[in-house]
Length: 377
Image (cartoon, rainbow, N blue to C red; front, side):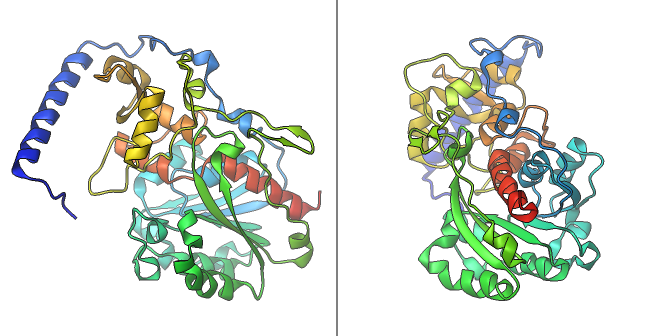
């Protein structure tokens, strides 16, 4: 729906936009891509690879649906799983996957990547089916239309599981899916069609509990075909936090400024949930998802709007209030993607892929537990 603005408000926003555009052009006119980013210690930045050490090949294979920017795919790869194929309807996401993993089979675009028209029987024998069906039907931002939303593709995920008969499946979505209003949807559209052949577990995980410097909660469904595998399943336990466990204290949570290599200002916190650049009434280069989250960004002195393609451009285009302006790489790090994983497309497309992805370290934690259940180790 269009914004309900008065003529005076429109004129004011137009003037602000023109002033900002002129300021940006002036600041970036003479910037040098090789100029060091002031005030940032790159040696102190978080390396998300440390949160998901590469494991040896475990002999298990995965089929990925709704692959997006590759969060689940990367997490499972780091946990030792082999890749059979990825299905993704957006061409730009397919470009990202191919650029990072040229040896993967990637089926993308409205012809090859649309799961609604795909035949999955050729993939029978794959060990794992995983994916995150579009979350908009169950998110507040997506109006929570549920089964009536044309973006509801849970039936296609279920159909894939039924046609391929994997040893296990993993599905991810927004926490809103477990709201009481969707209880009948979950029962009728996810559990009922699969529970005859699969033992299904559902649970929520928070990204910051696994070292990701971002407050992001997601719900997971994990199903096992064999009862012996289901009996070995143990939900991933947090690795980072502020309390002690039976095995000793957990690692401290990673926070925004320290993870980005920024100096200590006396306040730091995990980043608010990053907004996807693919959502909302217009393509955006900001990651703010609420007024409350903007307050947190301001207190951390990090500017989350006007995200730039590179760190050097972000440093040259200083925020008017002097706060640190983020780049695509910074946002990817806060989502748990390692520096070598590159996103194709314009800034809003990169942010869309980042914000819609499962945080790779969280996917890794789930993948490790699935491997233990399937291999009996």
